[in-house]
Image (cartoon, protein in one colour):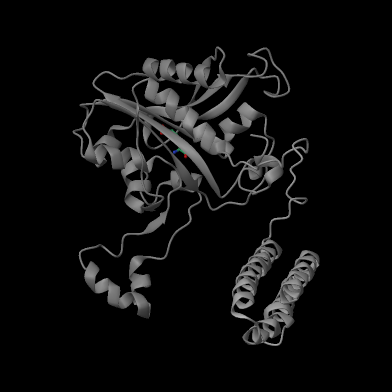
Length: 361
Ligand code: DAH
């Protein structure tokens, strides 16, 4: 009698657990089938009234049924709490993958890397100098004394003198650790990379050949060919017998490699305080190879930048004896070069942060 009741309870329980839809229902079923007030426990209580033999048989059956129901409840509970949904997990391998956005180098960084590669392959060293510079390295040492009109060629961003900064309360304390510095030296944002000429020569002896790419600043209004912040790269080659022919050869080699075509160099007389003689130099038009087109305004030539033989006063300012060495130097804008190479019509694109521009490179 009791045995049949137990078997019936078991079947009911299995059916109910099977149908359960959530964890609450499972907990409910646990109470219903195995709880203190359940029929099952009621049957166990009746055991005391039956024969010893029946007690043993029914007891064994009750035990195994209890374990069976518990196991089933446990498994069902697990399957309901698991987030795995076999249906949703199906993967459709035919759906196109999401496009991965990948970053890349800025066009100017690319140009700079390219320039550096070409020059290192010709035995040049890459030199560097500070963007916040003193008046001596940016002007005086380059043969541009304070009252020299050539200073007006470059509009300068002057920075607050250190003595002024020192007067502010937060800096007054710091200044005490800094008593050796000449706080009256005027400081500025370098207006060209020519400061690196002096910085390098102060620490090195000829012969050497260097280039110095870097960021520079001019206090002037912007338009399609001018920005207050842009990049130049400087070249400086110094030795015993350096001459204009060396300049022309190196320039021709560089531009031919950079534009991947035969380039001619033309020099025109000019003036820079740090060179003597000084010249502006042009390259044959990269679009029409000198025949004349709209890119070169029919001239056949494109203006590149300034160059010249290093003025002996510059060597002296850097600590070399006068008349002992000769060298050539040049400096020009990197943006202009990038604009020529990639046919970019406005210098302001470079720092606009406009991704439509950046993504083209
Ligand atoms: N520093 C000059 C400028 O920014 C460019 C320049 C001209 C650099 C002649 C040179 C040079 O080294 O020889 O306008």
